[in-house]
Image (cartoon, rainbow, N blue to C red; front, top):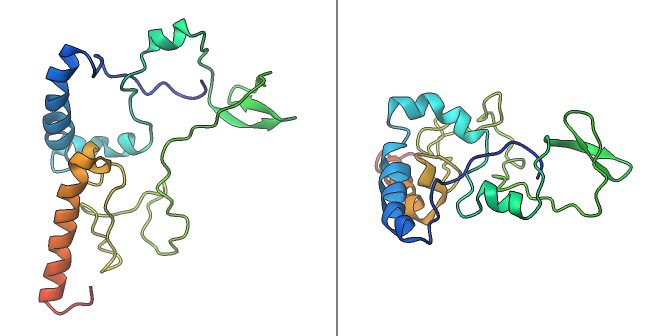
Length: 172
């Protein structure tokens, strides 16, 4: 595996402990306590956006038992082989390229991004471009924003802002 280790859930969701803990972790911790309305999350949000999610079911010991090696981030290709950040080239037979979810904002040609390419918004409402909204990307409001648990709350908030714009006669 190439790249930084994003961590892991300290328990397995399918176990008894997991069935007890997951509602708390999901509905309380990821949905409420880590919302952008809290000062600590506003401060840490850039770190959340710049990294992958923790592994839920696959533990480090599972990867080690399967013979998986963890190496530096892949930054390029040399003669068809992965080039790592440290300058080494891996002699491998196969590559499975898994990059996670890309928000796909490359088609948006508006001045709404910060220096890191992140949309500047408040809970999905883009003040710099009235009438532009986002629902679904990672941590729009909380880590649960990109899940079924959180997207409904975020969509409700954005819908309320659209209704407010309509009331004052602004174009939606």
